[in-house]
Image 1 (cartoon, chains in turn green, orange):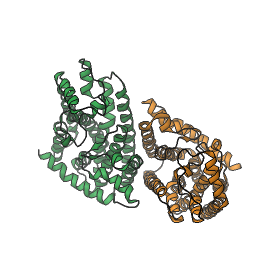
Image 2: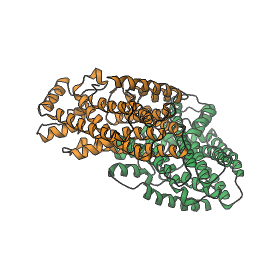
Image 3: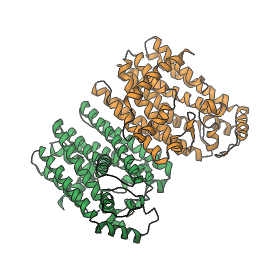
Image 4: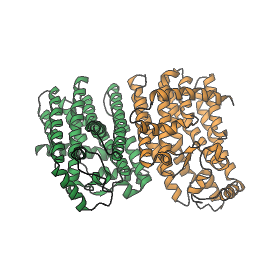
Amino acid sequence: MHILGEIKKRGKMVDEAIERLLPIVQPEELYQASRYLVDAGGKRLRPAMLILAAEAVGGDVQKVLPAAVSIELIHNFTLIHDDIMDQDELRRGSPTVHVKWGLPAAILAGDTLYAKAFEIIAHVDAPSKIVARCLDVLSQTCADICEGQWMDMELEKRSSVSEDEYMEMVQKKTGILFAASAMIGSLLGGATDETADALWQAEKTIGVGFQIRDDVLGLISSEERLGKTRGSDLMEGKKTLIMIHALKKGVKLDALGRDASAEEIDATVQQLRDAGSIDYAMEQAFALVEQGKSKLDVLPDSRTKELLIELADYMVTRTY
Amino acid sequence: MHILGEIKKRGKMVDEAIERLLPIVQPEELYQASRYLVDAGGKRLRPAMLILAAEAVGGDVQKVLPAAVSIELIHNFTLIHDDIMDQDELRRGSPTVHVKWGLPAAILAGDTLYAKAFEIIAHVDAPSKIVARCLDVLSQTCADICEGQWMDMELEKRSSVSEDEYMEMVQKKTGILFAASAMIGSLLGGATDETADALWQAEKTIGVGFQIRDDVLGLISSEERLGKTRGSDLMEGKKTLIMIHALKKGVKLDALGRDASAEEIDATVQQLRDAGSIDYAMEQAFALVEQGKSKLDVLPDSRTKELLIELADYMVTRTY
């Protein structure tokens, strides 16, 4: 798919900017721990979206790069802390930060990325009014992500969860950071408030589609492709849209626990398939992406607008 | 001491502003966990300093209150995460957040305060240029605090630490947040860059004095007055100025471990007294405060300037 090359091109620019904006300084080990997950890979979808949103309104890619780095660091900060909370041991094909560096280092590595993300975006080359606005959007986004992660952990403990509750949780946990990426990129690119708001809405919705696809891939893709433990949602009793549908269909879904075997996971995934829950979730993801894409109409026609549409499609069709 | 009343007066305004700016909203338990330590007390020294710095340059107290709240939330965020890392179980006379709410909740409560601190200061009523500057100062401060906490944990593991290393660690871990309080308060109050920088320098130095006093109190004060475990630095093998002096004097100071008895702690404190280490540390603290206070000369003479001087003295003479 053509869009992959376009994401990679921008991802490479982001990687170079990370090297420049988050160098390994003293105390070295703290910055090594902070960079460890960042350097382990990742698709750089959020910074690529930020850059595309800037380009789509005629912005200068070089000028928005620090903001793109900032978004990627926030994403990595949430992953490091979430992996501690969810006791996940594998991420991007490597041991998670707390497994590799220990709990105190992992907490602090996350906190450092958070601080650096704000420091870096505070230095972006834009009028003060826009910089202050971006900082405001980013801080509200971070508070929303915390709320989303909290809800995610709460829903785990409950036997019954509604689709609305799932949607609210996922909007906060995942959708909002895509929304912020598009909004910040467009604001820095010179967009009107109306356009920036429309992009925020569009990518929040598309981001939920992305998360549903992520939930599906976490069940059906191979561990090697995923880079993380397959079926961990089943182990933890996460209430994804798939599980909510299956529970409604009468499938019994107790948390399998951390030591579930591949066979147990396969058997449960087969039950989910049989109940039509995986197909159902993907239908919802596709519908959300269509809904989100329609809001991109606010943008003038351009090659970049097409890329944003292709990116949205990729987010729910990707295989890893 | 008169200054205590002045701190309390401003602390009360900060508490009211916290109620308004960080209400318990959904998900309720997350915000309860986030507010738990904030509401457990604390002297509100940092926000009081921020307010005094604003007043000293003719600023409006009401207008800087959100920034004062923001500083207090950052302080509480660092305490929550530090208590996890240091495995401390008592703070402000109550169980620490991770003991009371569990590890995932404590990580997330800290992250939420972190996000809210930035969100609240982003909404402060000031010109965008000043707001962006304050956010920049705050983010750099947070990165420094992370570096300081990392160094603190690293020095624990070492058998020999220099005074310079201690000073650098404590400047970052503690001094810098007092410095940022004074700088942000004065910038929002309308200070010139020169004045704001001088206040930053002054309070960074005074803040180190504060930490040395804190180290001393952690050994000699009662657990009831401290609100935290007495002698925990001795249990963890922390390298405070007291310990560095004692080690130089040949006192044997292996970490006593988490289950050290009151008698073991008393005996070690007596050794530190006998070696003159506690007196030595306090002499350094007094000298730092004198050095810091001299930098307050940049301020015009006023009752508020006198209060800032009294506050500095209080910071190294307080008994809890």
